[in-house]
Amino acid sequence: MITTVAGNTPVDVGYAVARDLITQLDIPVAVYRGASRALLEDPQPWREKLDHGVDQFGLRQLWSNVPAPALCQQVEPHAPEAIGELICRNPGEITLVATGPLTNVAIALQLYPQIVHAVKISSLWVACSMFLAT
Image (cartoon, rainbow, N blue to C red; front, side, top):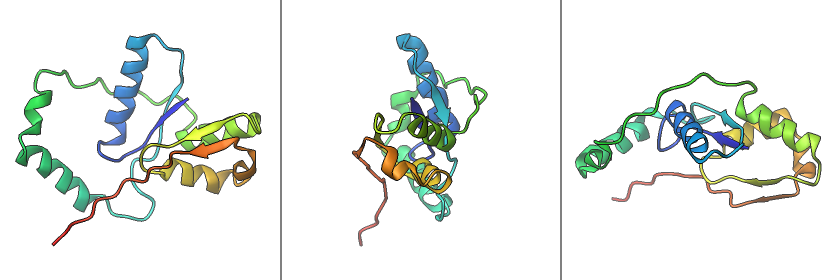
């Protein structure tokens, strides 16, 4: 299972890219759209900084010949529910690997607190943040 979450890219774009990649690779993996924003933080200030950085450093040209992904409809359930249901149906068998913002994991833990003891291994939890140095 692959879940997407808002972070360096909006959740809808990340979801579309993940689905497109899985389709192109012909891999039978479910993809679920997750949280569109952080639980507590207003995304606007860092979203503006990320977008400004793309323009400031001329990174937009790297993607100029790449077609934008076609946005697609979500297949239920939502990512946190899919995470919780999968772990609960398979106690002790699922390894949870999170490589971006942990919003989907946090919501899954709120909805399914029993997954704390049901997950086999939870590793590589990388919560992404931006810090400004002065």
